[in-house]
Image 1 (cartoon, rainbow, N blue to C red):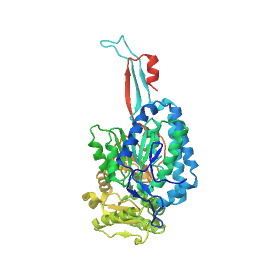
Image 2 (cartoon, helix red, strand yellow):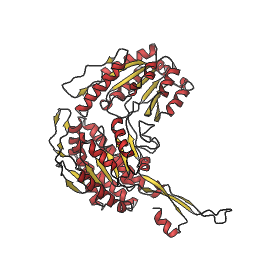
Image 3 (tube, helix red, strand yellow):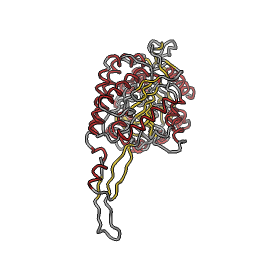
Image 4 (cartoon, rainbow, N blue to C red):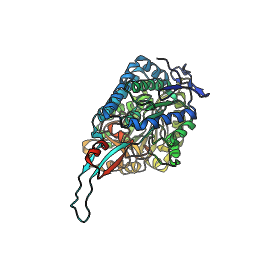
Length: 508
């Protein structure tokens, strides 16, 4: 499939703008061939107008038909074949196995949401009969259901060009409940986004969905992103990315005349607390497991464990040596974009510059390519508590080891943490009573709490929570992964004293 480099304004390709850019092949550190045209304000407004016009039609489409649409999208993504895998790898430097795995996850998510909406059970309808004889005030009949919000703006993530981007979880969940979607494609993988957008448009046409149910805008401009979230016809926003990017967009949302929901997943340092008992049991296997999690995908995961909380002592020293050795044995990896490599070096150097102890650096970074090596650094518990800059996320294979004086100080470190996507405790059965304070501390800080496990790898299921207290996410009441993520894009409505023959239609 040829990539045009133009924007998808509904089912129309459009390239009115004069600003262009190319994506980067990070392995070769050269530009890819396709020239992408940045969307103009006029094209943005046209996309939103189409979505607004499509909404009254699309929201009335049956769940069965929307499920057919989602399943057809998954079919059309598969039909893209090796071409999609090729452009994915050329825009990210990630291996084919990762590309194929992420494609499978994207398809699974689409099919999962299709299955979720095949019946109306997801609406959680509640019907209460009238009690006219109740005194002193009769009770009316009450029925509650949920309605879609309207056109949704979705921002693709840099580190997941498929599963968290164009047809990823935000888009799939919004389309599932009847909301048209406008994607602001991530400029690091615009080619991948363009191919997936073509698949979505083709699926919409095949299944008879209204024009405007989906659009895709290219841009490297922050200005276009802010213009999109401020448009009065946009009714909610889904964002996956950095804290700086998410908080800046949220500021624009807050300045709107009409407030709208802003659902942002903005990263995390995902602390792992390790008890003395766990260290005494054995450190080699644990060190290998944690090292694998640190370097997975070159550390470019929002669930990468960037903070290791330990108790100072000989067992911790042994663990650090074994972790160091395990990291030394990992192979160098390519980051998705040269800018991310630069940021990794800058952020890790900043943390190490604040650190009064000796940095453990596995290898010296090579500045002539885009490969990175893992880094460790160590500080004390009181240093961590005293300086909030140690909580800044380093996007890449970096982890900060905090050596606390005792379990009480470790508990205080957890209480000083900002909100996180995940937290983990490594402990033994003999520690169960001992770790109760740690459990309570973590419960107030995380969306997912793990036991003797690492946080990388987010299962797509009903029980999953991918979110957490601010700043890990902008609204900790919701998850960005799993069937429950659909509840971000709907609102409740109650019907009172309606005749049954009309109510049956209103509740579907």
